[in-house]
Image 1 (cartoon, chains in turn green, red):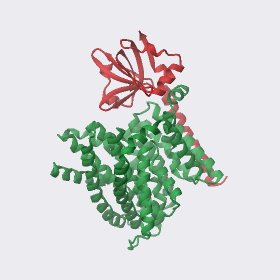
Image 2 (spheres, one colour):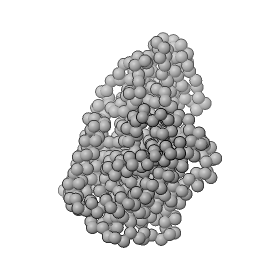
Image 3 (spheres, chains in turn blue, brown):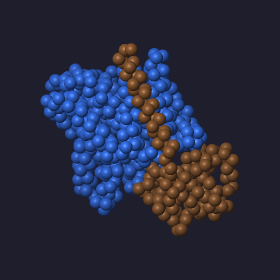
Image 4 (cartoon, one colour):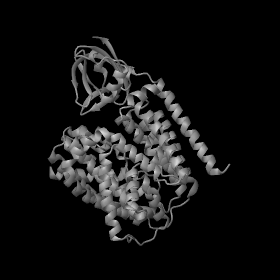
Length: 413
Length: 132
């Protein structure tokens, strides 16, 4: 089993690199494909190892297209501006390095934290469930008021309402399978919207310098990692609360708004949440990510030793993925700089639209079109695009408030 | 009109047009009428309508009711979550009608939970009693 595990991790890391480097491809896009390969593997643990490795690798590699091409997916969306700020200073590689530091640091610190809180997690989970809609509503209020200026607060309310209604409609109707809906939604809101805007603004990737030293104090780095670990666990605990909301809250509460600490935080939350969603599956039988849903389908009941084994796989894959991210982050820009940015962006836009159509059909394109308009609206209103997460937050509040049947009835869908 | 304001109006217009088109599609999609034996994993996320006899019923302390619907030797799970149960009672649906042996028709989204297929009804009139 050891040799097979090592080989499967390498295979998973290779697939994760290809998927991560391709703009618009998310682990949730890859999972149906990976599951369809199950028949090739005689042991269900093999496909579980593959999925965990691909998922973990993508968490690291995803930052390369999001920083250098500007085509993020939902989990990296909030990092685009800080990442681009460093890119314009010729420090794109430092931005990549910071995401690797954040990812690895939060993975280790997050696992240690989880080991201490795992005993009370099930209790907290059960106790909080009847009040979950209030907790998520508080997160929404926090998100809106963190915009501070009244005009921006009103704009945030508009975006959350618009995306919330759009989310309720798409998630509760049968226009397309629910598991397919989030792909065009997030690709439009966080990917295509930014690409279309950057098409009219930029013509080349700035020349990158050779200095890769991290310009952040050790104290700030450790603080960002610790906060990211805790926020990663919080994201795993609260349904519909995403990486972007958690990062905004952590930055606000931690009193840090600097690009470098922000990149460490976002990446750290992403990776810590990936590991925690697997542990959440073991602790409360509730999968909190696309990868853990797939693991639940494959292994049905996750035992303590299964969990330990898969955490080992995550750590192994994370180590390899981190090294490869640093290597690719240093070398890919040398190649990208030679390309015409406008043509590259146009190619990526075309690729994403074709991919959405092939995977989700006509209704997928309609959802992509609508979510792109909402994502662009955020940019023109000069508010954070994370308000688009109303698409999950509002339907989740209604679900936990047990209002879904009434709203579905009222809408007649 | 300044350029950003025009772009904001254009984006709001396109967002609303998209939402309206999706809404029109959503209210016009009719569920596929199928026998329980015809419901497969390929239909996960799709809206279907089926009928059968209640072969198993259990009530959860949190207010959920879990049914197994059977017809011609095939079974499917029908979870009625607490919010949905409240909606049923508020619509004057007598929960005592949902008994083992009752024949009901169910409309809802096909889902998968722990390797088993289920139909999740969404609105109160998605469940109809055919015979008690």
